[in-house]
Image 1 (cartoon, one colour):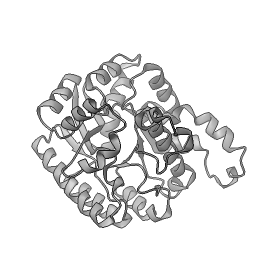
Image 2 (cartoon, one colour; image 1 turned 120 degrees about the vertical axis):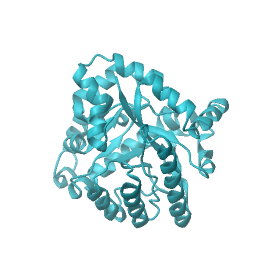
Image 3 (cartoon, rainbow, N blue to C red; image 1 turned 90 degrees about the vertical axis):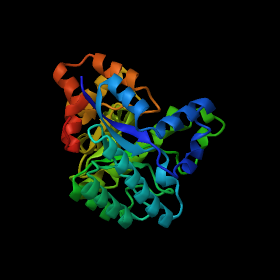
Image 4 (cartoon, rainbow, N blue to C red; image 1 turned 45 degrees about the vertical axis):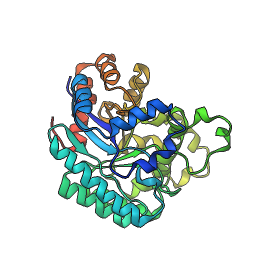
Amino acid sequence: MKKIALEEHFSGPGFGKYMAVMKGLFEGAVLASMEALLSDFDDKRLKAMDEAGIEISVLSQTAPGLQAEVDAAVAIESARRCNDFLFKQIERHPSRYRGFACLPLQDPEAAARELERCVRDYKFVGALVNGHTQGVYLDDKRYWPFWQNVQELDVPFYLHPMNPFDEPHVYSGRPELNGAVYSWTCETAAHALRLVFGGVFDNFPGLKVILGHMGEGLPFMLWRLDSRIKATPFAKALKRMPSEIIRQHFVVTTSGACANNPLLCTVAELGEDNVMFSVDYPYESSAIAADFIENVPLSQSTREKLCFRNAERLLKIRV
């Protein structure tokens, strides 16, 4: 079955310096092979797509991306160069690639302008941002004009993991818990919940946020989120229960999570219109991801929605 994949990474020129944070999270040879694949837009990437039946990959700058940059001026210029570079790669294979913009959220106004430029001039289908920017999360009121711009452009925003701003004590002495093994999931789920409880979606009701990795665990917590928030003094300020906000404003992908039961649970909790196929290339195998989605026990119509129809609708593209 044809597929669209939404969490497929590359690394633009000059971004290798930010990947130092990844060195302790991967075995050396594994990281070296990934770095080589991140810079490839031709034979290896297209071969992996063809073998997996992926018609279109939406490409995004790999973590930690610009969120690791401390200088706002450098971030603004780097974002522009990265997006220009990505557009040139898409032009070389226009039927196979689309782009998520890289944004300098160190300066929310500049980020809004860059997203508008990428959507208007380059036809990018949204943005992907790697978590917090120097410890500032996206529920902060300084980002509300940015969210207004995202809503007006009517494009989705992919919230991707990165390291916590500071290491929680519970991880100390246990480096195995860092990164994609566990800490990124907790960090990204908490960031998403900051948007939920911070009123972002009440003020910008047209927003759609994408979460990878089967929703970073949130689809399995909806009942408990509602139940426990009702027992707190904060419930009176809520206009909607967390589960209602998540079901209405979040869509999730299967990136890096190729297991039947979690997918079936996610579809049951969020609905078949809010789940989409992805790989997390090159960190995961396109072949394994494709075999998983082709064989999970779903109806043909639901499988079509997950593989490409939901992405076509959300991104306004056709395969």
